[in-house]
Image (tube, rainbow, N blue to C red; front, side, top):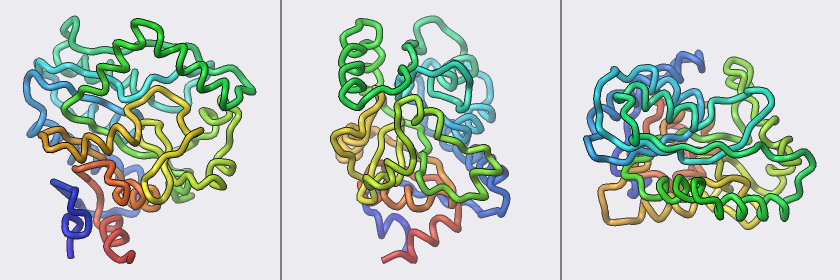
Length: 269
């Protein structure tokens, strides 16, 4: 059995060699994602870019050329005062620079970071306020119309070796929201895609929407469409538990991963 047999919603499953160094593994995945990007992204397309170091590796490896595409972030996030992660806005800017830097071809918007001790009802109110702002709404609606999404995933259960080697740390973004990994794990969260949180079945729940994003339900709708739209996820064996939930929930239709992750997925009943 291969991945496409076990997960029939996958149109493409690309499996590369596994290496013991998680940083090098991420670089190899990024290199393979470059090949997929160059083969599938065509002029006139709308491309959504998530955050993270794996996507950074992909964009770093792309040749600089005129692409005539439109670029959107897959999430709108307020951060500060320190930097702990590579957010979608940064990667949108870098991809724009690699793709010709033409005015009107990339879209993003800045929003203030959340205040300390924010409650979940207040988070929901803040998101509704953001949606009411014209420029935020323009970007939020634009990200929902993309033809291709390139994303990795976050994990509440990332391997400790990976956390140490890559300085993987989601605590700040959760602390800004008065949340913790332990709290979300107890609620059933195993991971996130585009900063939208999901459980082991790939489902989200009320109270898990903390950011404006191309969220779990929107991604599932794209995958279920009879269209050429693609959700491409690039992730290695260090986040298998989250990857399993992602695939069970049918949240992507293209997967780029490594052999150890693929084997772990196939070995599980």
